[in-house]
Length: 369
Image (cartoon, rainbow, N blue to C red; front, side):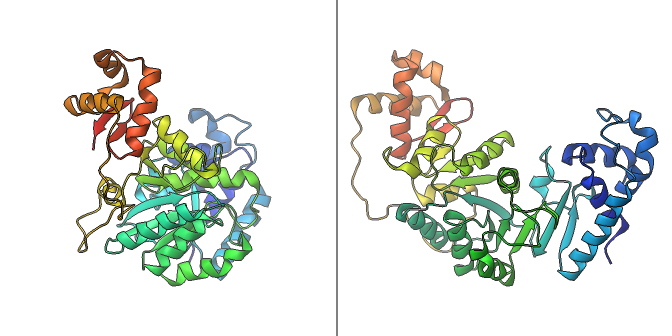
């Protein structure tokens, strides 16, 4: 039996000027969505930041009828409803200020497992595909949940590799459960549920896969996990927004570096250069940084056949040595110590990151790895 609180939550969230943040203010102030629906019209002035215009649609029969219809749709389609103010969201997502008020879920989510979000371009290259394959091959002995967006390209590969290696996976949708976009992934979506994964969306059954919904969806992809991996993306690609949300939530972001001439590596390289993501050097190092426990099997490197010792240039050696002697040194202090301007140091730092010698921390600080 779906609860009365679900009914009033859907009605309240359907009001045009009550977004996720205003919804949360109201239910926290009045104790429940039902109480907010019944009292906010008269007592809205007691809630900070809530004015007459915002609550103008509360009490509308149209929204109550919609909520009734939506609850029937959920019952008929085995859709679970998760309410943020009832602390039913996955733990990390619940910490985000702009977390969705309501989540609709098909399938199962084990909230005790660590989640890792992995996204990338729809135009996945063989380089990105190989990385995803290697990542799931090397993490098959770990218990975690992968998170992606069910788009074509990188997202699809993430979900498929998860299924192949029996890793539960969550697909976050940019529309309601009345449809599936892209339709090519319908069978994949069914397989995700069948293999103990889940489909998740904040959008009710009236919401189509409109363009703006995809950016909105990306904040959930970033919010669910302590770490987000960007496989491949061009300048301004959708994955950049996911990285931005993850940074804003103070979560870790990792990016797969590539040639500066490769179109779908340029966004990753830019994130690394701007210290908005750490460069991925080997899968072994990445797994360590993700905080997984020691596996039963030996973990190989991203490029396991490459055994050549790397000879650093003079400037690379100077900077590498300085960082080694001064862990977490800032860019300004480094520039002062080696008497080089910051604009000359940053490209060398990027080179060292790509070589797997240095890692950038927040606040433009660096350590040797």
